[in-house]
Image 1: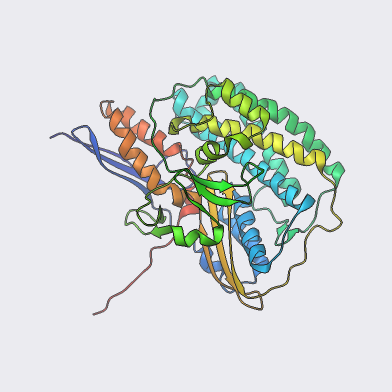
Image 2: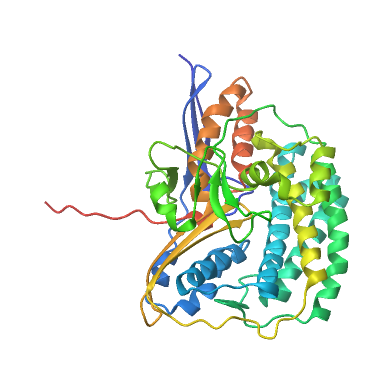
Length: 430
């Protein structure tokens, strides 16, 4: 019997701190552990006892890359609880700020974290020596996404302009005009990005995933919609806990998510959205997907970099649509009044579905909060990828096999800091 262990103590080019251990026996993967060892961060506990209006500013601190996702899930959950509907220009502004986040997050992953895997570099800095023009394009494209966050959110990192009911301040129409010109360039750069990543050499591996995403009747999913899967799931966000469960595992500070009743692991994120909502992409995004050979469905996890490039085109198109049709609202927010209850919402963060639940009292004080980030939801599926896919590469030399294992993790663009949770501590003193 031959035994081989691939162990990576600290994963590079992911957000946060994690590790990896894969054990192979006789060419088959016996076990795979994606180890998240980053310390717990207690955000759900921080929220308890705070007034609900503080939620957007607190949850924005969970992630420096995707703070809008946390703000959007939070405000939608609380508005659902309070019976508030945000429509018209304010709703469009929420789609616009989400476009900015998708652009900056997807481009960061494509150029600085994932492309080096395909081109044989240790990182984006090394890659820039030979692909300087591509890296410059990526950085400039990311900057356009950041500028959307800065204008609508008040600043690029941990934005402060989002509130329950809308925004503290809505931009004037003339303030959006410079963004439109930059987005027209960004759309062309995103198109070049899609064509560039399509030239990479992709391993031919596919899996029969259970995809889970939001579904909206008229739009590619961002903020609203029912939670659906390609295996028959179709529920509201309020039914989330009845269909999904989180469990602790010894090797990770992140919870593992599964579908209840034996539904198993599932995949959220760009691949899930793409496979279940392809027809709702913009015309240019669909045309590009067909041009680069992606087609209308993708089950190869290594091609997720192509899917992110197509979604970046969509985000540019959608941002331009919102800016073109924008009229400044009379008031930047809808008034809200506290009342006791429980609110739920899910939105589509760049890395996948993000679920929030809040319970507040009559005074508006938060009694309980639950936040389930996409990396936690994808962690079990990621480990299944390592088991199902890496066995096919077992004949590779150790260094190349290790690199393939790391690449398989980076396919997910895991946001480890977002996912860290805390193991429940029980002391039995006899």
